[in-house]
Length: 290
Image 1: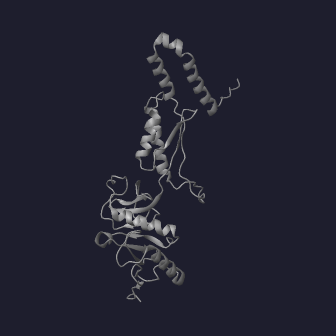
Image 2: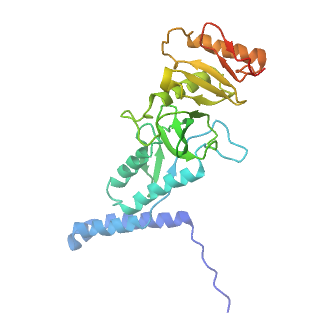
Image 3: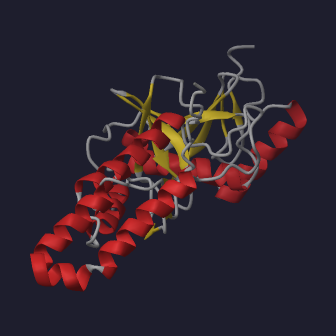
């Protein structure tokens, strides 16, 4: 006897079946409500919907260009998986007939710190959700007792912590307070780290950050000054935080011009020295190393 062919299930057909079942519940709602009661009908509909949670689609933050590995976002796969599973769990465990799943998913995502404002969470026809929003972008990593923790350009601590030197970001070192909590404004709780981040943002906007490995903010606790650390291991005494008036220091514009001149003349913003200072009336070079 010839074997019967197994009929494959078309995912789109399955979705149509679910929607048809839901529609049937709605059509029969008046009669069923009269016989069994509205509460029983709602409970059955919720059970049917809850058994068929649709896809969770999150619009991830995009890279300017796709990487050679085919990545289109800078957000690590592990974090993308964590956020997707967070939303899926909320959709499974709450009443799908209410607005609660959508609201709860939005609040949970906002609490992760990845969004600068509440993300949009919209139901899809397939009983899933589409999530879009304004993502916070890492500006640096702050070296703490736990490792290198990402910090966004707006100063908000982010959820990812890497081993020392493994983040791929410029590193802010010497901060006196770890990110065990955030400030009242949602930003990093110490002024020294925020000053270091502002300096990195200024150098980036000026196109002078290519040779910068990070900022040492330890001097800031003593005399409100910052020090650049170059990729070649040199040190550049920058002086006060960007925009701050410090007696005896030249302006930010002059400091930037000095870095630009040193780069153009020597190929390095640290002039190839172990340490230089660019904030005083003249550029000071440490010649003790030769």
